[in-house]
Image 1 (cartoon, rainbow, N blue to C red):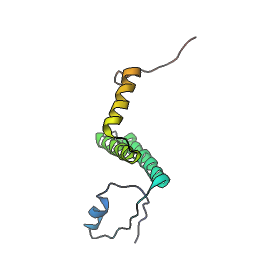
Image 2 (cartoon, rainbow, N blue to C red):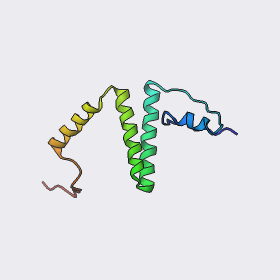
Image 3 (cartoon, helix red, strand yellow):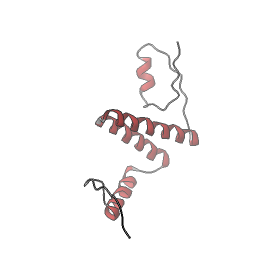
Image 4 (spheres, rainbow, N blue to C red):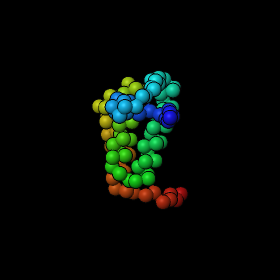
Length: 104
């Protein structure tokens, strides 16, 4: 029986599956196709976090983001600088501020 997945997986997953005596069929995505698979994976991991709230799911989200940065040619240092600049200009989300309304 063949189970179809057609989804982005972590690099070691095919070997882990083969260690279980199963045969895997893989391909590598590039360009727009890879972007599609990254977008789908981000949604999948975010939904898993919504479902169970586990920190492990946040780690998966970050791993997908790191891979996206790599494929976009953005270093972690560059990304951290961008994040820090936004924090300095607009703040972070640590205080839990909820904007309810703005009156003119």
